[in-house]
Length: 101
Image (cartoon, rainbow, N blue to C red; front, side, top):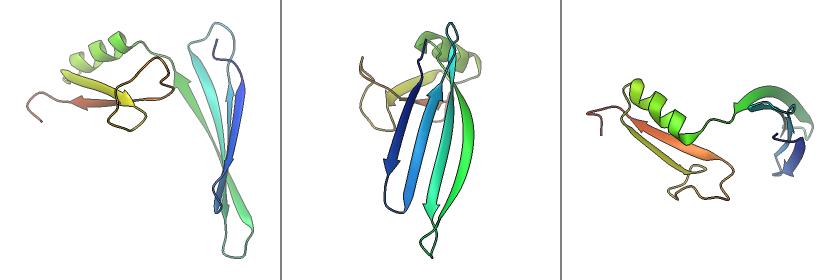
């Protein structure tokens, strides 16, 4: 169970709220993303998106990537060159097709 969590941040001209919701015994959670952007007059304009995030095992991703013609599948720590670890929250996958180095 992913749990229900909320996280917010304020970057000055941009503020956001991430609200994660999930149900027990599911392999996904819904991310309700709300963003507030400061306009020229100092007011904020809000937009909202919903994204469904799935928990997929690394071996399953590699197998699916290979079947789709991507024999080289590497995974990194959240858009960095660092390898994933037990504390990794977000993984970034880099897939390379055969012959496209």
